[in-house]
Length: 110
Image (cartoon, rainbow, N blue to C red):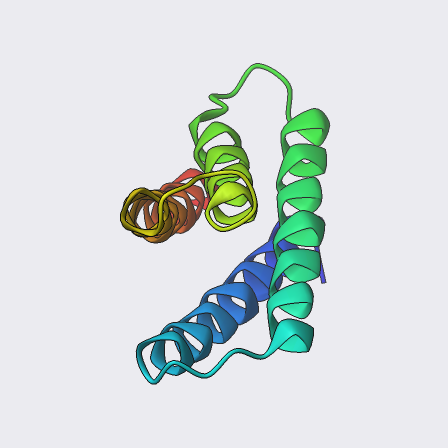
């Protein structure tokens, strides 16, 4: 398995776990362990995307920028941003930019 394929598998696992966390969020159920696993998967997959770009110099880095922003926004959503309504906007941006980053990475892989 290549680095880019492994990065894609981890990105999909991160998005799937994020969708589960989103459903739990709307049910007002908090699972700190799952949130930490989601963060660990996001960091690992973003690191692999960065490594993929390092292996292929001279190509665009949009996916890396989008995924890095999504990871930072997800981390900051409930740790730094207050009040609650503002943190929900940051969380919404986290979801949209993260999905965009995955789609742009898939496009970059082609």
